[in-house]
Structure formats: C-alpha cells, structure tokens
Length: 194
Image (cartoon, rainbow, N blue to C red; front, top):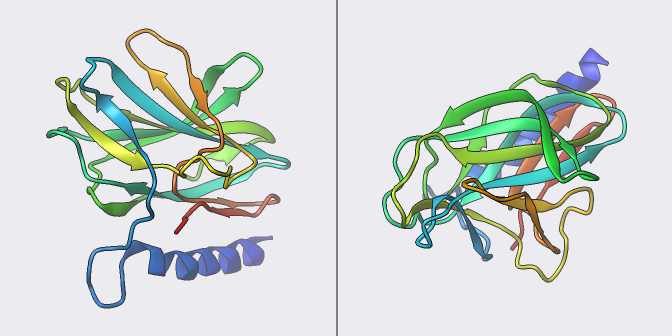
C-alpha cells in the first residue's frame, strides 16, 4: 500500500504541475466562472465557502488546489482552510479534522499543503473562511463552475452567511480546483474547467 501511495503522490504532483503556472512564466489561465465571496460582502454580511466530498473507504487528505479570481476591495490577513465532517441530512458541519491558513494569491491557483488528516468513509467538507473580520466590500473570490453542470457529482458547493445563517447549497456548482486523497479511495478529483 505504501508503494501505491508514493506512486500516486508522484502522479498527483506531476499532474498538478501544469495547473499552477504556464510554461512561459505568464499568469495561469483561470477558467471562467462566477466568484464566491470569502470575507465581508458589500451587503455587510460575512461569508464562508465549502466544497463537500464523499468517501466510500476513507484515506489521508493529501492537499488541494483552489482557483482564486481577483479580490474585491482589499481583504487583509489570511484565509483559513478546514477539513470537517459534513452531516448533509442535518445541514451542519461536524468535527474539525484538520486546519491551516495561508494568504491566497489573487488570479492564481492556490495550493493547500498536505495535512495528513485521516478521513473515514462518509461526507467531508473543505471549508474556506477569513481568519480576521473584514470591512464590508473586502473579500476574496473563489472561482466556481458556471452552474450549467455539476462537475463533481460526489459533493456540492456550500455557502454560509457567518453572521447568522445556515449552510446553503448552490445547484450544479463546485469550487474550481483539485482535491487529493491517498488511501483505499485513491481520489484525485480534478475540478479544473475551461
């Protein structure tokens, strides 16, 4: 199993390389799609995003790549990522399994490091939220699919109004990026469009 994991990791790294930058050194070609806010929207509400995914057997979370569009305003600080259990039947997030933070680059595919979190069979979510409170009109934009088709049928794009709301689902949309899992499920979900 260890040899298979190492080989899969090497394949994942090789497969992800063209996504991060273009061969000529220019900025990456980001797919078209709507941007979903992480931070404080002009309407004064703060938002978080999540992409759910379903595992049949479980495994080890081995990182993710997320497409960020231009920022709106001037969001400051870092974005926190979390891997959490997702209880779809109740519409609530469960226990946090792993977390970290980074300052995302606008107009780039941003790489989350491998967390080594052991995931059980069931539904999990990759959650993205601002670490510090933002002034209204300052937020990061995560690119999602355009809503004409669900590019990752094993999950859904969720959005939370953090200052009083429940997780809501966006039909036929997913965060644009990649999600890697090493283990029995051996999952490499490429969500990159365009």
